[in-house]
Length: 411
Image (cartoon, rainbow, N blue to C red; front, side):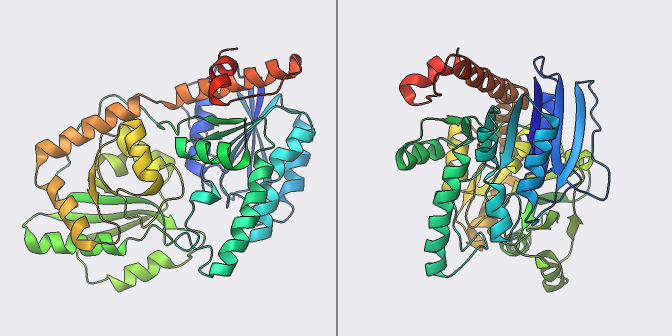
């Protein structure tokens, strides 16, 4: 199979870049994939293909830009030119832009692929029905929220034009099945990016690093985390360094710089900026705790899977998609009340003061991560592509309702 993957890709700063990297990394090793056609956004620096293992050929076409109104035409043209056997879209609602029109136009691509009769799977990392539009930085206006929900419903129908729509959380499948009467929605877990050898659960010398990783400013706010650690410092003699690893969310440019100025008086506070893929292991490996300072959630958490891969204890709010993910995939952590600084401080302190507890959490999260490596996730996608081809050859429709799901997947 010549598989086209439409995604942002490192060193891109566009959302889902890291996930795109690991999709390519693992599909290129799959025995049924002869070539990957990477349809990605344009970047000034060359794309990162620093893979250790040899794999299939990768053809790169940088054919779109964030917030470009012409993306839908450019990507469709590239698909026609490269003539892949199948297409996989790595999507969320603001994948192609944070401006409404280019974002919406990009989500029409699965429908166009269906019209071209190319087997298509769309991985949708969030659904609008589960997005807090205010906390996600989209709009605070209640009237506009209703408008966006109406538009979101229409865009979801476009994405549902895919032969198979993959979601990472069971609740998403339930909602799509019920609201849209969909029969082509598959639950495919997020998967863990890396499954390294059992990690060294010890810590480097010096202060214990408490780290948050991601794109910040909308529903991921680091102020409560900074204030919580200041509270812990007052209550204990723990030597702690605060590490903010990542960049601003596209919706909140300048957020981290404002935070840096506001908390300039705080000791041992470090902002790393963008973290290149090769530096991710050290960022996680050096941390004692990974914190999720979220006020809401918008989908499955890649950061949680990364933390698990490196055997890290986590502190997180028990809310929305994150709470569902933890229960479904076997992760564990110390929970806190969202936006409650004292609750967050207590959760962090509980882990840092109990070395045995910290290590036990890391071991359990590592085991959860190992249970769903990306290689297994790639196998699941390939099974669905085979089911799509079989359905086309026999003039059937894909039906992934509960009574038909097992039959289709095992064809």
